[in-house]
Length: 346
Image (tube, rainbow, N blue to C red):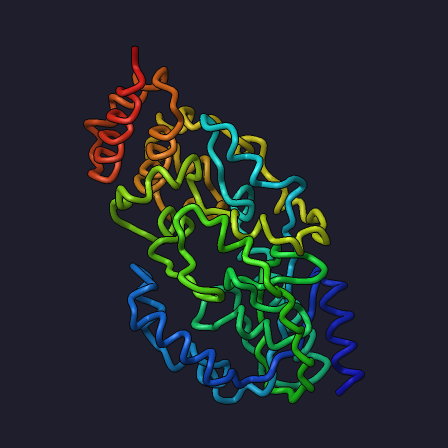
């Protein structure tokens, strides 16, 4: 099994994965209890799918009873600069680092399938692959390996790559020796909790998604509560604050993947340049991008919040036509942006 583990790791790195770990198929009652409490409190917000198949999500074996081992794969998407600096230019849109180019699911899943095919061909077995597309608690599973630990921001932290790892898994019926889990090295640090603009962390290792900017700008389908709008600032898709501030990012490295390098038109674009987008224009701009899945209306909802926070009344003429937009999401945020900027007009 030691030789097989090494062979799997070598093949995974040859395919392009940056981190490889081996997890057991059972999670502790602690992880399951956390998930049940998260859902019971409604902290999952609109994400009803998190409550569905709760027992399947509680452990790999709950999802697939025949699984004997989980191979955890990490792909580095580290940015070339500190994304916190992007927040300083209020008239520019800030898009989460992971969404500034192609959808990572496509690349990671292709590589997972490649590894799985090789594994079946060389060591007959059954396999299933997952990349954020099934009821798998990816971060708690990854935290059972040597890849990293689940930080106080609830994301995985790696000693080699900081907070910038996409995760994927190969479930297999091969019985592989699991890793000794990486030790939690957050210590007394609370930087990720302290920086959160909306106080989305009620306690260390605990997230209330309903207050999280990533949730609000991506998963939330309705109007964003007014109490969070100013805190959102110019973030129009996701938020990297708790990831970017992590001290372990001093070991992070810039990604080598061209697909993860930011597209020029999504690198600090002007907020006002998005206001003319109709549905066809939105789809064309975000083809093969994860942003495409939220649709034009939710995207413009977010952009208008950024516009309202920009402090630039010169963009008001571009906001006014959206007061009569067909979408009530867009209209309401246009009203809010108009009100905010009108207070600054001479």
